[in-house]
Length: 482
Ligand code: NAD
Image (tube, rainbow, N blue to C red; front, side, top):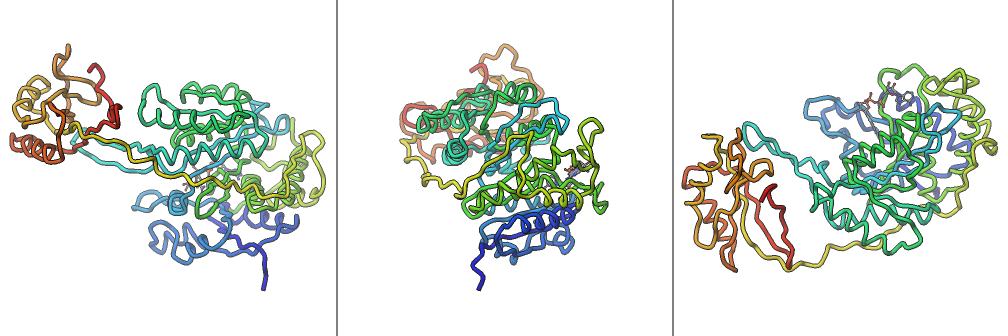
């Protein structure tokens, strides 16, 4: 029986099969050793009515094998179909999306010749939990969830990678000047974890200026770690300014598996023409080889790829008369690369990967200790539009306060409207009415009675949120102007 490592392969949709076939040929020619299990996912499964594009036999393979090399998948528009990528990432707890962004100046046209950074994007939390509600005729809500354990996992992973890859600096990107609690937790966790890596430089960027700087001076970044949404945006900015959206690969690393892919999609506009650039998937495969301990094969393929690019053998997407010599299709690009296996680039710096697996083992990250948590009130959100004057709502709701609670403040979209607002008039149907404890001890019973009292006075409550103190820290934000 074969003792080779098992991996799962999906040929994908659109240009997927065209780029997967030569990628596997290159892996074979370079001496990669694994047994391939092929799964069918994506369009074919969506057409059979499998809503997330992946069936049980495919899951069996993914949970059994060491890595998943995946070509791009077409996501059907509408019809209630779910994104297969998000489903795989979340089901397999792939908390880290890792995307190296490199420019290949002067052989691939770019405005940023000195870019060489790796972006670590948190993959499971943030607004991508997809928890959304419509609460009133006017207002929709999408919850942003950030946890201490989720933040620590991705941050520690980025630091461990930086150390093992000989990188010098780790930069944190967040927006904690505005989201002081959720993004503040990510930033604070970064500062705490950084203390365990005194050999690495660190800095922090607010996402707006951080993204602008990645676009204008990416050479100031080395390793970047950030939350899900910011990571999604900045990794596309970085790929775009490197001049090579079609060239980049990425990995998704998790507790139950690791997935490797190109960063681009299934490119249906060029599918079947034999002109797609296979480089993104080849880079995904190079990351996979390092992950499964075949770094020397990864090195051989990567150096041959660099040599092919500097020799001016380019697919149409990067072909430019001034920098290219031969315009080739997908198969001929792969052939040119295979002819160069064993060669090193002369203009680019050759890469060197050790034999050891680049799999990073994190220590167990446990839930934080149960905190000293005290219930101190409740925010009751009401759907109310009888008047635009918050004073009327304040007067009516003050009278509903039950024993042990008082109406402290009313806000809409985070802005304080009552009491004593200089401008209490606002067209709104979504009001946050904060009732807080007058004494020391309130219980869930007080909250239930208060909700009943609000409802009993004829108000339509659409959501409630308990207010807690954790030790001496307030566990909720104040309204603007409060
Ligand atoms: P896309 O990346 O497929 O294409 C964008 C543009 O880049 C197109 O003009 C395309 O021709 C070109 N392009 C992409 N890859 C190329 C390559 N290897 N060589 C040459 N040119 C290339 O993005 P899109 O058009 O927005 O999405 C198409 C489909 O892919 C959608 O269904 C989308 O949901 C899906 N998608 C899948 C993944 C994934 O599986 N990881 C990622 C992104 C998009």
